[in-house]
Image (cartoon, rainbow, N blue to C red; front, side, top):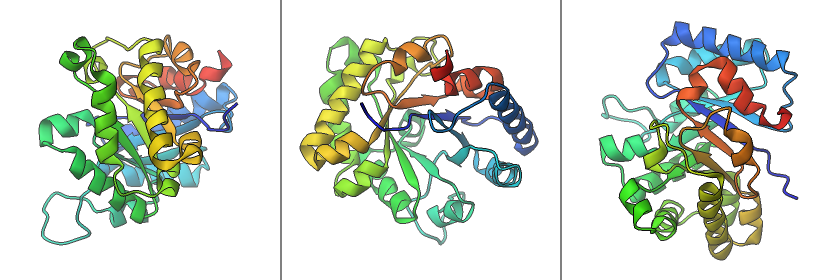
Length: 260
């Protein structure tokens, strides 16, 4: 039996201005309280746009909401002439707990490579925050049956040079690209196949203790009606949730999957 606390992280992507963010956080808080949310059974985190972080921080701290929050990306650079970039120190000062690195949309639209994601993960860790390191295959790789070796190759590069202790502390999010925002969802067996293989690779590379402690999420069209079956798998330790996290009622059901 594992003692890994599942992490349900809602990735808002480019949605919600700071006023809308305040309303969504408050509604989610009320909904979780109404459901007698138990943070020891499932950790709730919101991964929000940069412009929403301060608002979310103020609410979480002021109202003592049992909820973590974080950012969707980070700069490789500490400071300087990098217009439009946001440094790890800026995020740490806002008390972000998590930073997503290597989301498939960053890979596709901004050309981020596994090597860049590896460097960003190291920047996040150095600033005292937890990276959520994303990996996953596109449909052609899945159809060819190459999803496991493809994802493991990503993981090898994304985690290269980290210590076993660092790997134990971070989060790996397996997000099959063909299932993101498409309504298609990997079966619980699909999720377990790859998440289990990732854990085995972590064990082989960083040791059994790191493999036992690292949390591995599934991401891709996660909904309240499929989360229970996904979470029943032994190597799935939570979910990276997209569109469903913008609906307080839906996301609350996902966070409280254990109560179903």
